[in-house]
Image 1 (spheres, rainbow, N blue to C red):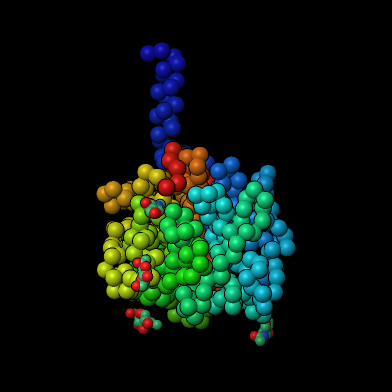
Image 2: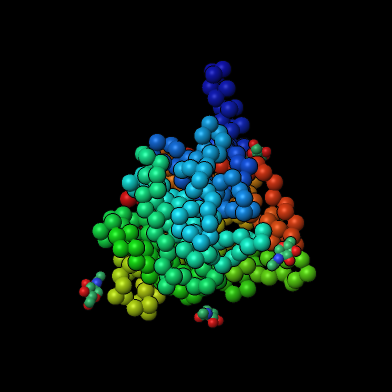
Length: 374
Ligand SMILES: *[C@@H]1O[C@H](CO)[C@@H](O)[C@H](O)[C@H]1NC(C)=O
Ligand SMILES: *[C@@H]1O[C@H](CO)[C@@H](O)[C@H](O)[C@H]1NC(C)=O
Ligand SMILES: *[C@@H]1O[C@H](CO)[C@@H](O)[C@H](O)[C@H]1NC(C)=O
Ligand SMILES: *[C@@H]1O[C@H](CO)[C@@H](O)[C@H](O)[C@H]1NC(C)=O
Ligand SMILES: *[C@@H]1O[C@H](CO)[C@@H](O)[C@H](O)[C@H]1NC(C)=O
């Protein structure tokens, strides 16, 4: 054997012994606690940081030279609750659409006397469209009250711009009475679908685990409570919406055409919804690509898994101890899947009031060689 080929052989053996882990690349670290991630066609990176305290320097930022810079301005990061539609109350998710515009999903959860509320402020829950060429808000859609319930917690959104006149948004509501909300980008009208159904609700008395410990809401002086979050992860592929209630091991799908058709009865929509697969463990966020992979975060395995939409089989993309609650994803146009890792179960509400999260939080990427779906 050649010296060079011996060297290559050793190098390959060494590389494969490292496990799948080696393919995750660190992109950035964050001081604030991140959730959503969006990467534009030019590689600009945007992150949402749900508010942990009322006065937080930003809840939406762009990564500039490795640091988070309030985006699109400093002034839009704060405002009055009397006018909650005009600023970012609590940015939970960010998404790039097929026209390379940035969308911000705001839960609208305010602070009251220093404590974050789990009931949105009037006009707070919204999706906001930003033109990246001029870095300005171009349109705000407040979610109509009729599409929400008292405890609504809008969580994530995906867009199909080929439906209707200007496209539709599909929004997951992770309240216990989970739902998928469709919003017509032409009229701003929204329909709440599959609300509080067996498809969008958690599994009854669901208990998952994190770092091999059963994962509950644990408040001081109260018995442990099972987590009951409904529809959370959401992705579009092949004309269907794929979604999963967070406290479950189920992925469902429903045709987009059925969901957006206001003439369809709720019974028809339920009849058109199917169980795609059960998954090994619960999921966090999801993302799809043009090859028909529905990626999702699997904290129990410190993994990013995917459902192959052609066969409904669940496969592993990458598993690594670096993935501590892989939260949200973005398939970029240059062939990478981006993922935020935020160690969510270390929150005080899961640890009898103790804050166990420690910055820095992480953004990683892994090559998929794929692109967003059409
Ligand atoms: C993954 O990478 C980390 C950091 O480079 C390393 O400490 C760890 O041992 C690796 N794990 C595996 C399973 O290769
Ligand atoms: C506001 O918070 C302070 C400090 O935690 C507490 O003493 C006070 O009772 C609270 N007021 C109300 C109206 O909840
Ligand atoms: C939601 O569904 C649960 C379980 O089926 C039921 O107990 C509850 O009454 C429903 N809530 C509403 C508002 O319909
Ligand atoms: C968007 O809708 C069109 C129908 O107008 C459909 O062909 C396409 O598959 C949908 N895109 C996705 C990603 O589901
Ligand atoms: C819904 O029904 C109305 C009234 O019958 C009709 O005008 C409209 O075209 C229907 N919409 C769809 C999407 O089928």
